[in-house]
Image 1: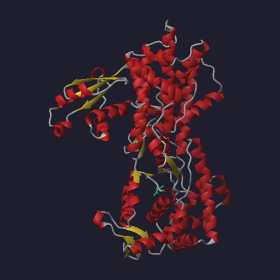
Image 2 (image 1 turned 90 degrees about the vertical axis):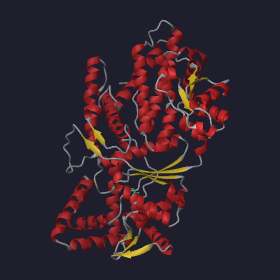
Image 3 (image 1 turned 45 degrees about the vertical axis):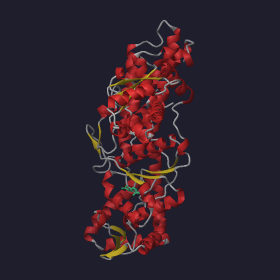
Image 4 (image 1 turned 135 degrees about the horizontal axis):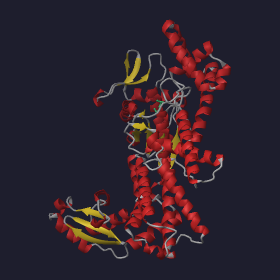
Length: 573
Ligand code: ARG
């Protein structure tokens, strides 16, 4: 049950106002004595031609709260709603312990949402910037799925363009088959860099490369075969990384997939009189939007990044009739997407309004020194390895200090999950448009705002539940939960109940951090409760079992919340 929604229903009934507007207005007061939810009446003063305190008084006097967990009181211009803690405890904990975090999915089941994420350039190293889109997009896909949408997860691989003409040329001149089999990305990068060095002295290389890309785009078998080989080998490397961080896709239709769909785009733009010549290239002018021209075909008639995005948007609409088409791509490409969406709009495709660029900031490093293999870029694999090995050290030390006996394999397994989780959490713990700063100190702080802290809270609570079982004490349900009315208990229950609202908001703003923030809030509220009260050691068995039920609901909320972020828990550590 979503309590905010319920209050919105009650207020809609009693005021006759628009429900969405009411939902926006409902606040969560800063102090518990001011109620659990508050409805401010300022904005109604105009419509109703009454002073806000009078309106608040009228609403509090007339609203029908029979059969709900609320009482209402007016205070100045506000109507404050107070939750009956006993009924609330029963409702929230029972629902979570029986069914998990249940979202309202009915309205969404026939809606298609495309989430495009990751989309690395093949034959290039997978660096931390690609990790950002991969982690964000994976989380968004999970969030939309949780809300009942039909989600299509797309990896728009950068597997086309002039650089493949260069790679083909370079491989024929300097390629080393053995090295390619050993470490494909390393070898492809080596010859790519060499190409650019040699090109300075030998301009004919540029022409050969352009020619080879043209041949590739025309379907010439030798060029296609080499390109296919580079693509397949790169995907093997990428898929290993995806598997390690628990990321999947429904399709890998990269840029190459759209190459033969571009003539149609050109025809459409021509028909609408949108295509003009500029220095031999074909472009769409966008000055009326204050944007530079969008290049559709280059002077040698080959296609370009933007034209492939136009073709892909049209293909996606025809194939999926999407309600939303989300591009999780860094904010450095903001202009590109503005251009693409504008061209679609000009061409008369209304679905342009359903396309959204979900942008994110840069990735920076604070206290980290990497033995980077590839110049100054940081590879995701290196970041993960380092994070896991540092986490392993901490866990092994903790275990020694506590005199815990843990096998090496167990430590390895926990370190892998925590270390990977710590990296993922860093990407999703703040608003996505902010630059991220990685710092070992923060991301591996077992008491701070980190994945290890959340997972540790989960694992410790699971162990309390296991201990309870051993003592024959099982989580209570129903009316036995009514005794959970203390301030600390209530704060935990409240935090658990509010997770649903966080999921809804995370989707509407495409901001997974809203879930991260709520899970952190649950863990902090729970740890306060844990530090101030005993769970298994109270004299009153009924209280023990009620509190165990609370523990169980906390575990479910943390596990499901983290799962929506793409982070998995461990059962003990
Ligand atoms: N491959 C591009 C890169 O690595 C990102 C592709 C973004 N997606 C798109 N539909 N343009 O920079």
